[in-house]
Amino acid sequence: MLRLSKELLLLALIISVIIGFYLRYSSRVIEYKMGPGTERQIDSSFKWAASYNYDLLILGSSKFYRGINPDEFSMPAFNFGHDNDAYNQMYYKLLFLKNHNKKFKYLILSVDFAPFSNISDTRNHIYKKYFDPEYFKDYKLKKITGGRLNSDLNASFDQFMKIRFSMTFTKFIESIPAFLFKRKPLDIPFMKSNGQYIKPGKPAPELFVIREFGSNELQEKYFHKILDYCHSENIVVFLVMPPFLEKDLNSYPSENIIFYQDYFKKLADDKYVWYLDFTSSTLFSDQDFTGLAHLNERASDKFSSILNESIKSNIINYYR
Image 1 (cartoon, rainbow, N blue to C red):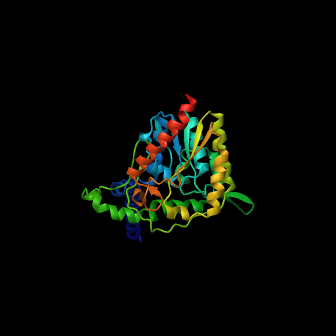
Image 2 (image 1 turned 135 degrees about the horizontal axis):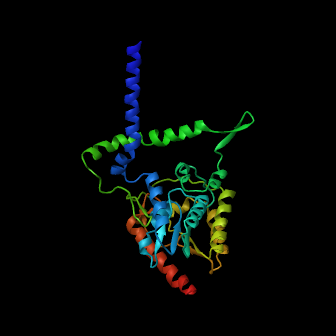
Image 3 (image 1 turned 45 degrees about the horizontal axis):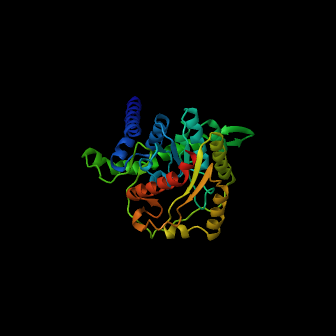
């Protein structure tokens, strides 16, 4: 019996060491082959956003996170976007910057034809390091059990296992040979210190995308809170509709396109809020995109330069 106990204890110790090693080093191994993971991206983004000085801030989800290069602007700029960000995350990013005494004059804010349809919690385990606790009140992280309010520990544990194991273990195994033999791929994703995320890829106009088109009152509320906040801080806002491939644009109901074109035009007063629409730009083709929706690195430079000229020549001079 004593021998069995010792063997079980030894087995438990070995398993603990393996798990500890995995938790500590798996991200490093995966990043060697596949580029920075989500947590590294967000941590770097917040670190740089709080450290650098800039006059222009860029907020948006993946189309802007990957598709706008701050280096192409004629003023200091920083890209504070991230994949799947919605307006509630963008609003709390503004509060984070205010708490760090960051001042800027202009904000580029992404819009599209289903602007209020998304509410994401997939990165909340990381955003909790940076956002005010008030942010989480919009998410149902707790439940009523037996008449008392209890934290949903099971959901938290499931999320931890999903993030640390089920979502990463296969990638970890795939990355081990490249890490051990120093065979680093040449086309892995990477982040620039200006906040932009570069993810190499090939055009895929044949892709079929399923989108959500419903309108979430919460996101519309935060959209207007962003505008109100910027007005109170004397920040000029540029609502920017990015270029679309025809197939991507056709995935939106025509009534959405008509409604939101009018919606954003009415918000623009050409003083504090401007609407810049590149929906039907003929300057971009299938070869400028990775997948169906994201500009590639070269095209993102091109779009950023065009956007800069539009802001500089038609708007910024108004305030000088």
